[in-house]
Image 1 (cartoon, rainbow, N blue to C red):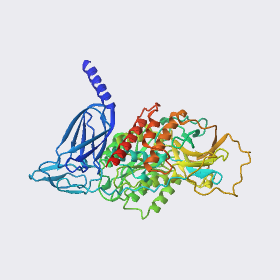
Image 2 (cartoon, one colour; image 1 turned 180 degrees about the horizontal axis):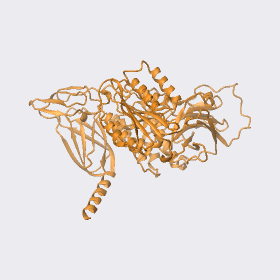
Image 3 (tube, rainbow, N blue to C red; image 1 turned 90 degrees about the vertical axis):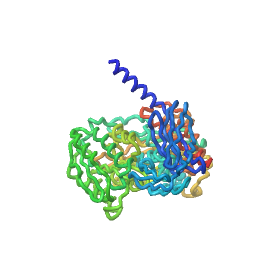
Image 4 (tube, rainbow, N blue to C red; image 1 turned 180 degrees about the vertical axis):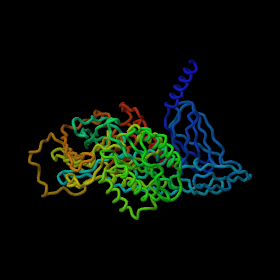
Length: 625
C-alpha cells in the first residue's frame, strides 16, 4: 500500500512539474562566423522535449519554469550544455566548430546516412534529427552556410475583404465555415521558428478554432444565432460586431450509425514521421470512439488503390487497429483512383439514415490518377448528392497542397482539418468526435442586412473564399458549408458609423442612385442576421433571423469570449500584414487576450497566447538581424 501511495505521489509530482512550463524561443549560431546553424538538435532536461532549428537557426519549445538544462547538438560542432535556474523568453546559443571539421555532409530523405570526418571515423546520422526542409541540402567545409530550402507548399491566394458602403451594398452574404486548418498550420510553422505563408493565414479559421460558449439552440432548430456589438479595439472610431451561430450538440449515444471509409495515402511522400505515423495515431483515436452499430473500411492508395479492410463493425476494434498498424508508405500517388474506390466501398455499405462518410488522410500530393482536378471535383459533388460526404485531414509540410485539400472538403460537404501533432488528433477524434463526423445542418448560409441609419460602411473580417452572391442566399441549389454536432461559426464585421470619415473608400459615394432614408427605418436596429440551412437529408432550406439593436460598449466591457475573438482577429491581420489592421500589433493582441480568465479546460487560450509570444520573438529576432 505504501508503494502504491509513493508511486501516486511521484506521478502527481511529475505531472505538476511538466504542467508548469513556458514556451521559449532561441537561435543557434556558429561562434566564429555568426551564421545560423540549421538542423541543430535541442533537448530539454528533465522534460525530454526535443526540437530542431529551422533554416535560420531558430527554434521554439516548452521548458520548465525553473531548473532545467538545454543541450544543443549539431554536426561539426561541439555539444553545448547549460543549466538554467529560471526561464527567460529568448536565448542565443553559439556553437564552437570541432577541430576535426566536417569535410562533407549529405542529407537525403529520412534514411540513416553517413558523415565523414577528417579523422576517417564514420558515424550514423538519423535524418529525422534534421526535420523541416533540410532534405537534399549539401554543406561543404567548415562554417559553410546551407541554402534555404524551397517550399513546395501551395495555398490559395487570399485578398482581404474591403469596406462596402451600405447605401451601395446593403447585404453581405457568405457560406458558413467550421474548418480550422489554418490555425494549426500557423501554429506548426511558428513552432518551427518561422512565419507562415501569408495566404496560409485565413482569419476566420483562426477565430473559429475556439469555443466561445454560445447558448445551445432551443426548440427544433439545429442552430441558434447570437450577436453583440462593441468598440473596435484597433480603430476606436469604428465598431465591431460579432455574429455567432451555434449548432446543437447531440449526445454520442443518440447519433445515427456511421458507415466510414478511411482513405489513407500511403505513397512515398507520406513516409515522414509527421505524416503516416501520425495518421495511424489519429485513426487509432477515432476507432476507440466507435460503437457496435458503426462500421469501418480502410482503402489505401499509392501506385495503385486497394481495400485493406472490408467494412468491419465498430466493436471489432482489434481487427481494425491491426489493419491500421500494418500500413507502410511507398510508391507514387494514385489519389484519384483511391477516392473512386473509397466512394464505391462507402456506397456498397450505405447506411440508410446514417452517417456515410469518406475520411481522406493525405499531404495532398496527388500526382497520378484522375485526369483532371475538375473530374475529381465532379465525382465528389456527385457523391455528395447521394449523401456520401468527404472529410479531409491534412498532414505534414514541405510539399503540402492546402488549396487542393480545402477545395475537396468543400465540394464533399465535409470539414477540413490539419493535424500537426497528437494533441490535435485527440481534439479532432476524441474531444469533438460528434462535430467531426456527424452533420446536423448542411448548406448553411448567412446574410446580413445593415441599417444605413446606423452603419455607413462595413467590412467582413475573413471568409474571403466563402463569399456568395446575394441571390445565392435564397437559391437552394447553391451549395454552402456544413455544421456538425456542437460546432459553432463566428464572424466579425468592422462597422464605420455615419459621419466617420472612411479613408479606404473603394468608390465615390453615389449621388443619384441611392436616395436618403426617409426615417421609416428604426434607428435602434443596427443589422439583421438571416441564416438558411437544410436538414442533413433535406432538399429545402429553412430560415431563421435575428435583429441586433443597441449601442456599442467599450471593448473592455464586452464578454470575455468577444475579446478573445477580437484578439485572434488582430493576430491574424498582423500575420497577414493586412492593410486593414489599424493599430493592431502582437502586443495589443496579447494585451487583449492576456486578461481573460474564462474556462480553458483544454488549454487552447493559453496556447494562443504562446503563439502570439512566439510571433513577437520571431519579429524581434528579424529586426535585430
